[in-house]
Image 1 (cartoon, rainbow, N blue to C red):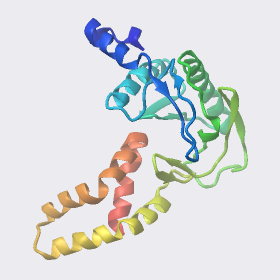
Image 2 (image 1 turned 30 degrees about the vertical axis):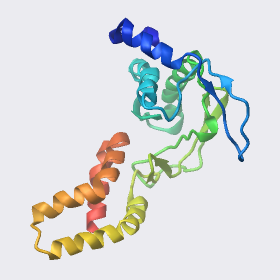
Image 3 (image 1 turned 45 degrees about the horizontal axis):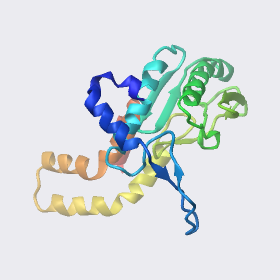
Length: 231
């Protein structure tokens, strides 16, 4: 990590080195406190510089992914999403595998273990009258396999169905935001202007939803908000 940070300067690098050196970590499970072990890699979670150190660790991955032209990558914090487009599921798998191989090698080089059980692969269609929804293809990721199949998925808390629709998620979010929308109604009844109400609504209800949507699938965020407003 320090080799990739030439702009920090020797003094800042020395400070980070002293901060990380000699750290001991332990995992508490069921109120059992094991003996702490000396950490030889990674950074302390929950610390003030922890998020910045994490960004330093993963900073070069998006740049490396730029060399893979068959798939696009989107990264939000520690969540990485790969997108490939092609005529069928087998062509999509062939386009996706080079990116997964690069990620596996990158993770091994940085002493990171990929949790295949928490990784997902899904096939989306733009038309409902497809040849088959039951076709599956296995991808190789790390030491495991990832199966592609047509099904709904959750990306950063947003449910997207196999036709790239957000109707189910919009319905659920609409129910969750009902108390807040009632409060907005009270604000509107007090005589607030339409512009004030829209600004207040975006900041009070839509902020998280819009941010999550744009982080992964930008063209879906606007449709999602329109669905929310219609309800």
